Amino acid sequence: MWHLAVLFLTAVINLCVASHWGYPTPMPNGEIIGPENWGGACDTGMKQSPVDLSFKASVRGKFPEFHFEDYEEPIVGGRVLNTGHSIQINVGSSPNVVLSGGGLPSEQYVMEQMHFHWGSEHTINGRRYALELHMVHYDSRFPSIQEAVGNKTGVAVLGVLFYVSSEANPDLENILDSAKTARNSVGMSDDLLAPLSPDDLLPRNEILISAMRVPLQRQDVAVEWTIFTQSLPISFDQLERFKSIKTNNGTILTHNFRTVQPLNARPLVYVAPIDYEIEVSSSDTTKFSSALAICIFVAYLLA
Image (cartoon, rainbow, N blue to C red; front, side, top):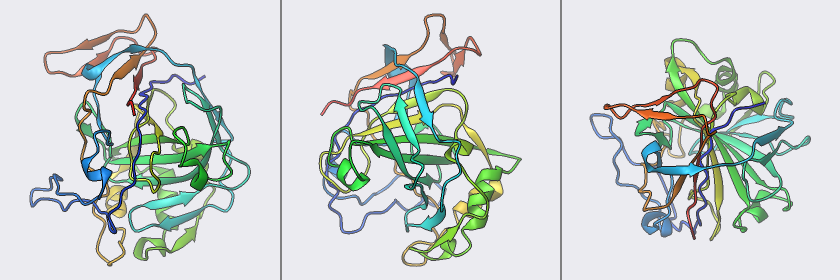
């Protein structure tokens, strides 16, 4: 049984109308502070993502467990694709990889694709991670993600954070080694060199669930986000290889994360067992009193 920590956010997504959207250019010191070009509500909306996942901004709550169906099965016909904005692995073929439970608003969500952001889009207590994986799912009541995005409960995303380690991550190595053509050409894809299952890229402990705003292509789309608080390793060399991916104009995609957006008073609910306590030190570092405890965050972003 998995121990979960969940942050649940529900937000309405409006159409981003910019003919070309992109990430801000780094400052000479490496900081990413804007300006950004997104267009429409993605520039002006009050319910934007990503956000900082802060313990201090939360109140208490509770959610049921998640259930992961066929996550352990190797992806059939898996290919690594350069989208111009990320490296993506399309998953949408039988058997369906299905997510359910966890307080999600619909009964089942089918995985469509996985893609990466370097560094992480979301931060935890102000700290950014080296990499963030997004596993994108759509409501199984719809025949495709294109139809699901028009529904307020149509899309659910799992997010996995990665920290820099002295040891390489073998599953990320498989993906990077496979992208021989894709790394240099937008729209190109390569077969996975070795079997890969979504389960290989999931941590086995706490989860944050959220549903918040992302730059999708339909109006009024709500996304249920799930961000794991337990992170996985990535080596420095592997991170540098992600940062060498080419864009549409042949430049290097050194980063593909959006700056953190204001929470704007949206309620954030922390879910944990009764015997689980949090101590906040004078240095604002959150410490957990029990290694066996479950911590869950939930935030509702009202339309």
